[in-house]
Structure formats: structure tokens, C-alpha cells
Image (tube, rainbow, N blue to C red):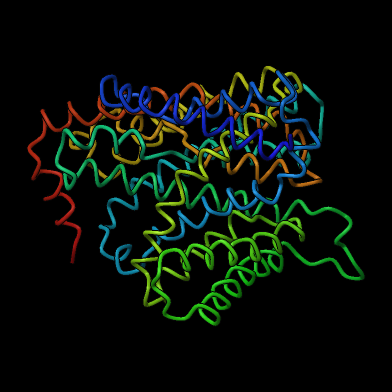
Length: 409
């Protein structure tokens, strides 16, 4: 029996076996579903049962690239300009403050750890350190989505956390995309090496061309099935071109998604198709991420430092930005804990970095991401609830809204 048929059968059985149980756990104990698929991938992979061998994983690489690209497109569809300009500047200041502090703390901690262990030059150790920093910045709103049923969706603290998760995704994808433009393989040097700035422009250009081709061949199509096929084809083309050039399919797909959601007359249908396809592709990515995980290849110190450094960045950065903005009593000292869950974007970033042929310490980076997803996702909803409930109990809902309105000229 072919590996594809075996994989499909296992996924179908696993989904049927776990769907009801994990949905009940999510409602009853505020646990976020998805980790079970990562564990399933580990059990199927070469490090366990070897149902999916290394050769099988290589044969599925186009599907993995599409899954990663779909995640990037999903982030892009959240970058609706008319919605972004309506977000108060205070939310952006708090979110970017948390994201940049997290990036800085994790990069510095991992840079010191990698240098200490392997005695490498700063410019060499900086590459995996920045990759780990980008992964650390990413966060998920799955925990908020679980607890949001208990609170008003338009509560200011919930809106702030949603903006924070979006800014985290944007900073993380841009960081990994720029990193892959700086750390180039020698095979693409040619007669004259492109500068990192030129590679960034090429990455953006691939995304723009992909979006333009979608408009050219699809036009005003609104049928969901045809849109799905068209979107998948566009993302395969754009992400495949980026992967061939050793650029970031994730960043390219984000540009495609942002372009389509802001320029297409079928933007509502496109957003719906992307949203409906995100969960299946998330499960596919989780399984392949788990199957390709080689935890024994990573050094313990950088991996052990990742979670505490990330927690320090999330909580410390969120608290610092709120204190500097003068709204710490309104958002709470620990609002950064609501962004502690990692979600699928962390694995997409790790897979994006790992398939880069010149990547340094790819297994170390991937192990840190996989362990972080395993340890934080199951508790992300509890973290979010623990942050949101005290703020809503202690602060009148209008107080934060008034603080936001005071900044509007």
C-alpha cells in the first residue's frame, strides 16, 4: 500500500477518534485542540514507528510547502487596510513593544547560548538565534477563541490581545523572511550577488506577481470550490518559486493573501475559503512537523532557554509597553501571558527555516519550536482566561476604551 493511502487512512481514523474527545476537553477544561496531531506525527515518523520514512517525507514536500504557505496567506488575509487603520495607535504601541522586546530577549539569550556551546563567530550564531527569536514572537489566538464565548468579543482587553497576536505574526514572518534573504546559499551567488535588500524585493515581487496572476485568471469568480482551486494553485506557484530561490514561502504567501484581500471584489469569499482551509492544512502541517522532528539532534541548553526567555519577553515586554503607555492598571501586569500559546505559525516558521539548505542548526531550532507548541498550546486557553477575567472584574469595560479614545485627535 502506498504511503499516501496509509497516511490518509491514519489521519482519517485519528481525526474521527480524537475530534469528539478534544472538542469536549476544549469546552470543559479550556484546552486547545491540535497537539494530538503533532504527537501523532512524532509516532508515525522515522524517530518512532517509521511509518513515514525520510523518503516519504521528502515526497510530500510540496504538500508541506503548501500547508506552510496557506498559513502565511491566512495571516495576509487579516491585513485588511481599512481595518488596520481603524485600530487605535495605543494598541499598536503595546503590541509592537511586546513583540520587539520578545524578539530582542530571545535572540540575545540564544546567541549567548549557541556561542558558549559551539564557540562560533557572532555572525554565524546570529542566524539560528534570530530564527528562534522569530519563532518566539509568534503567538496564537486559539486560547482567546476558546474563552471568548464567556466574554464580550468587543471587550477592549480582548481586542488588544487580538491585535497583539496579529502584530506578533507579522513581526515573526517578516523576521524569518528577511533572515532567509540575508543568509543566502552560495549556489545563487551568480556573477553578481544580490544584496539582502534586493532579495527582499524579489520575495515581495513574487507575492505581488502571484496575486496579479490570480486576478488575471480568476477575475471575479465567487464559487467557493473554484476559488479554493485557484488559491491553491496561486500559492503553489508563488511558494514554489520562493522555495526554489531559497526564500521564504511563508512571507511570499502572506503578501499574496494581503494583496487579494485588499484588491479582489471577492474578498469575503476569499477570506472564507482561506479560513475553511486553514484548519485541515494546520493538521497536515502538525503531522508532518511531528514526523520530521529529530529531537536527539538538538543541544539541550538553547532549547531549555527558549521557553523561559520567551516567557520573559512576552510578559516583560507587555508589561513594559503598558507601563510606558500609562495603561498598566487597565490592561493588567500579566496581559502578555494571553499571548504565550504558540499555535501552528510557530511550526510553519520552523519548517520554513528548516527547509533552507544553508540553515544552521535546523534541528535545534525545530526542536525548540515543537516543544514550545507541545507545552504551551494545551494551556493557552487557561492563560488567556487567567489574564482576561481579573481585568474585566477589576476594571470597568469603558476605562480602557476611554484611554484609547483620548489618543484619537
